[in-house]
Every structure is written in C-alpha cells, then in structure tokens.
Length: 504
Picture (cartoon, rainbow, N blue to C red):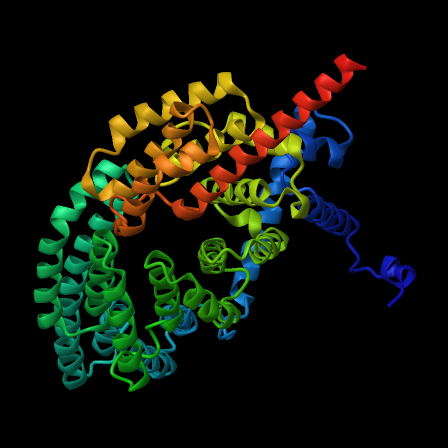
C-alpha cells in the first residue's frame, strides 16, 4: 500500500504515525550516540530544552521503553551459545503464564493439560521453584474440578517439592552470603577464607539430603572458590576435568549444567598456574562457544587477553583487545569492568606503542589520573602503581618517580604484609632497587638476581590475596632493566650531542 492510499484510509491515524516516527528517531539516536545525556536527546528531538519538551521526552522515553520491553517475549533463546538452562527455564515460565490466564478464564481442562506439561518440564530441568508453583496451582485446580484422588496426589507431591525447595533455599543463602563477601574488600575476602570450609561442610550435608542439581551446583561453586582462594589451581583443573566427564555421562543435569563454565575455570587455572601457553591453546577453541552479547563472553575475553600477555604474545593480546572493544555490547559492562579494559589497553600500549590505537596523550592522561588504591579496582592496585612507576622511569621523570616510590612503600606496608603476597613484595623491592642503585642497569641486574630467584620460586597466591599480575613480574623486571639500559644509551647520546655542539 502506498503512502497516498494509507493517508486516504479511514483507519489511518496521523498522530499514531507521528508518535511512531518519534519513537524510531529516539531509538536511532540512542544507537548512534549511546552516551547522550537526557538534555542532549531532548534538544535533538524537540529543537530546544524547555519544561514542555522535558515532559514530552519523559512520556516518549516511557513509551519507547515499554515497547522495547514487550520485545523481550520474542528474543531468540535457542542459540547454543547462550546459557544452556535459559531456554528450559523460559519454557517453564511461558507455560505457567499461559496456564494462569487459562485458569482465570475458567478453561480448566486445557489449563490442567498445560500445567502437567509445565510441571514435567520443571522436574526434568530441576527447576524446583517452578515445580512448586505448578504443583500448587494444580492442587487448586483439582479442588475446583472436585477430584479428591488427584488432589491428594498433587498435595503429596507439592509437600515433597516444598521440603526440597527449603533445603535448596538454605543452601542458596549460604552460597550467596559467601558470594557477597567476595565482592567486598580484600580484608573481607581474607576473612571469608577462614569461613569457607565451614560453608562447604554445611553445603555437603544439604546436598546429601536434597540430592538436587541446585544443591550440587552451590556445593561445586563453593568448592572451586575455596581452591581459588588458596591458590590450588592444579586441583581446579582436576576437579573441572572430573565434573566434565560426569556431565558427558549424563550424571549431571544437562539442562542445567553449562560446560562453558568449566572451560572458563580451566583456562583461568592455567593462567594462574604459569601454564599460559596451554590456556591459550584451549581458549582459542572455547571462545566460539560464548555468545558475544553475554557478559560471560567479556569475562572469558579478559581471561584470554591475560593469557596472551602472560604467554608473551603481545600482538595477539592487542588483537583480542580490539575485538572486545568492537563488540557492540561492550557498553553493557559495568563501569569497573570497562576500567579494567582501559588498564589492559594502557599496559599493551606501554609494551607496544607502535601497534596500539591509544595515543601517547591518552596514555599519559590515563596513567596520571587513575586513582590510587581505589576500592572499585580491588585486585588491580599493584598493577596501577607499577604501570605508573615504569612510565615515570621511562620518561626519566625523577620527581614523580620518587613520589611513586613512596606510594609503593606505603602500599607494601599497609597491604602486603602477609606471606601470601610475597610475589608483590619481592617485585616492589626490585623496583626500589632501581633508585638505590642510581638507575644503573648492570648494578640492578646483579644485585636484583637473588630477589629474582626468590620471585621465580614464589608460589602464585590465592584469589583471597592476589593482586592481578597483568604481566608476570619476571617479565616486568626484564622490561625494567631494558628501560634503564635505553635511558643510559639516550643520556650518552645526548651528552655526546651536547659536547659536539660546544666544540663546534
């Protein structure tokens, strides 16, 4: 139908078309300028900012948001790169939604048929919460249908499911309490380390009673957390390998357990157990299994970038970094996650400035303005301090270098006193050595050798204590010596040029 015929139609609503065009314009603006403020959007849509345009924008925003929310019902969930349990869970939710409407409309026969299907799918997927909801509505339905035998059977099943859900809820409370503690400060994580064995024992008892996927999963995740916190990365590889075999044999619910989590944990364990090359080889195959729109894709990519950096494949790390930034869903990440990517970008620029899209001005701005000891960079504080120190060392900015040296000393005294932080302690001492030896590369190399030997032998700390080594400290020390040698050569060249000018 042409525009002319549409306009001539009595069904045509000009105001509806105008509203649709305004909706479309807002969506296109958000796509092209996702960081636009509300004032900027209002001005772009209405030409000016006023009380009237602000009210119009709020109405427009609410209408467009509701339309977009309505599209959630039609999202494609069958893609195998999504979380495996998602499509089965949404099937249960969809069926229960349909059943609820049918029940309210008095369509009891069809409601019972779909409700039994919903209950069956919930039990197959071990979605106890939805199984309880379905069984509860089924008992009400049998009361309305006056079917006492079926009512008694449904009531018995409902009671069993409610008892199971109580066990799962208790296990969930234990797990989420421990998970919340991990999101706090390093001190909170270290306190959690002492509590995890007790949590693990409680979860083991609950799983023995429930024998459900949910209690197994909480137990499994807590077990891996304890191994992470204690730095037992070799055991993580063994546990994930064993669990993968059980999953392949069908002994773990295939509608719930996502083997990609095991893949991530395996690659993570290889990174922290100084087997970056193995982790890189595995990650290349694992990446294709993650959907680019998921947060898990970005978590995995962070791990992949770190593996490349630890393997010394800096060009590969740069390519992976660019791939992450080109992902249209990059902006979905939390601010803290985007700041971590900025830190990786800064490190890669420092290593290979000629291959980095980052400019010198942007790099210097980032290094000079990034906050010290910021809470939202927990685990990256040492990496920030080291990058700042090495940057000032390369620039031979002695004043800022000495100020950063003092920051290193203070940070070590306040936060790196435990034996588990030995690697960071040793590397800080190596950096301090550069000043003590008046930036003499050969003296630093000679006198730093005992510290370097201790660094080689020092075990990787557990997650409860770990400050992330974006570049392994051994490699960073080699770069530090290279910087010192380059500075000496530059100073000699400058001195020779100065003497030549004087003699001329």
